Amino acid sequence: MLSLVAALAFVVSGYAQVTTASISGKVVEKDGPVAGAIVLAVHTPSGSQYYTVADKDGHYRITNVVPGGPYSVRFESMGYTACEVKDVYAPLAETVVVDATLQSDAIALNEALLVADSSESG
Image: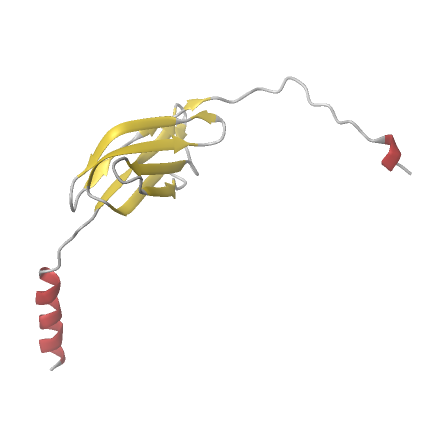
């Protein structure tokens, strides 16, 4: 009886339809991956927003997005200039790959001063 139930479940799952798409890729900078980069995908026609954070290797994946598009995919990370890719289309039941290379926007500090408040001392 158990094998009949398992076989029936397999047949039924074969008829299930996928109604979403996915967006994935890698976020890098000139020296390697950008871990922790925020990725925001906006479905332009509906305004639906999806986001994720890149892993330690710079990889990200946004699943269960509305198929079609266009999407605008924005990449941000502290110390880098944000990057945006427009007119991205996510085909039904497929994964579209959108990679990004961020440019350093770090501000160098020439000097740091530590100022002690004399009213707090002893």
